[in-house]
Image 1 (spheres, rainbow, N blue to C red):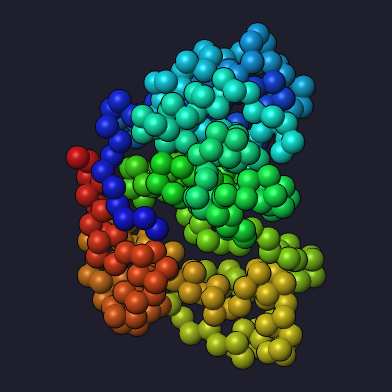
Image 2: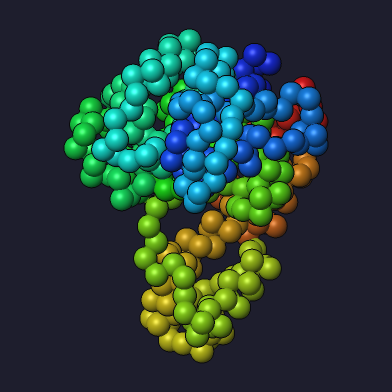
Length: 331
């Protein structure tokens, strides 16, 4: 997780999302949901939002929807953040007017982020040369072939290169946008937005895009699901594999195989993620003693919590708590 940063200055609060004929509606909707909805609970310094058209006149989105927008590419000149929500296709040329507008925006310091195939627009503008970037796994080969100067990073949800950010498949755009909210306004704000969306407040950018067999069969769900619920209810408890296997009525070997098929990871890693999430929640809520947070989350000692927390989020629990409570109390 990036180190806490100050809030956006007022001039940079405008988020402009690109629209074009053939618009990818899901990716566009992600930008609207995160940045474009009224959120009075966030205060007066929340984002402003506008939609910039690449093409003239009424446009048609995927699914047959026709729409109008707030203005043309000139809106990009005013934006602090620009969102490119997918693109028409890897082989479809990017108009020079859009390339020029994005280059100018980047030169003056605007942040530009892409969702899924929107990476091809950033690449065409030369904004990714020499940078790390990602995209949906289906587009990975085409991106690497067409733009060899990019340091392509496969199997991650998103990549944050400071002013240039890219995400993987469509739903990973939610993770990237929430990451930006967390960067700008802190974890409390990001958690509030995530809660309204009913999505996890934070998935690490380095999490793999593809989890084979992530959705268990009904039979497996009936056996693994109760185990996950029990672990969620008591993350501080002891959960050895033998105990989990006995509860599920399986051998330890079978339990490990089926747990991996259902979650994409091992019981130990899944429990560690759960404990870190619990610790993060406690740190965000109040100024609890670090030892108390560690015990409640299942780490036993504050030293163990510090080690795992810093390894995962690249920040100490104390620094994380200070950034959370300081932002939640206002400037």
